[in-house]
Amino acid sequence: MLNKTSLSLRDAIYLVDAARSAAEALKLPVSIVVVDASTYMQAMVRMDGAPLMSAQGAFDKARTSAEGGHPTTFFEKPLNEGRFSMLKLPHTPIEGGLPVMVNGECVGAVGVAGAPPHLDAKIAESAISLFQINSGEHQ
Image (cartoon, rainbow, N blue to C red):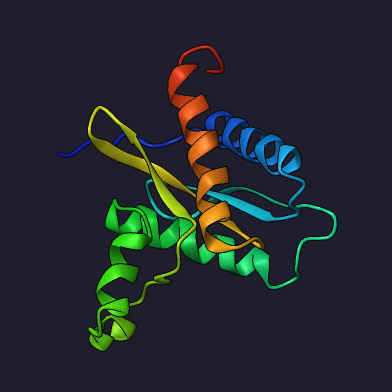
């Protein structure tokens, strides 16, 4: 029997709130999605003014990151280097999805969309860093 650690709803809400605060500080209206280890959505927010399609983009980025246990750039880099077979994978190889790692295990992911991809990733990274610093305090 295997046991897999996963984000709780409380964890997901904490991550969405932390990412929203980071986006607000940058004055960037984005969508933020947190998925658990099963890759299904735990929490989501589309900020006022965020592009409508960004909600699906954030989910796709989060799910890609959680499924692979890597940032979405892991899938984007080979594509940018000409490995077009990456497009056959059921992934979204666009920067802005980051796994949430606990004790070396992927327990979920944060996906952000609606800003330039490097800023989407910065927002997700900020939320995950805060989560890891404060883990235990919000549980």
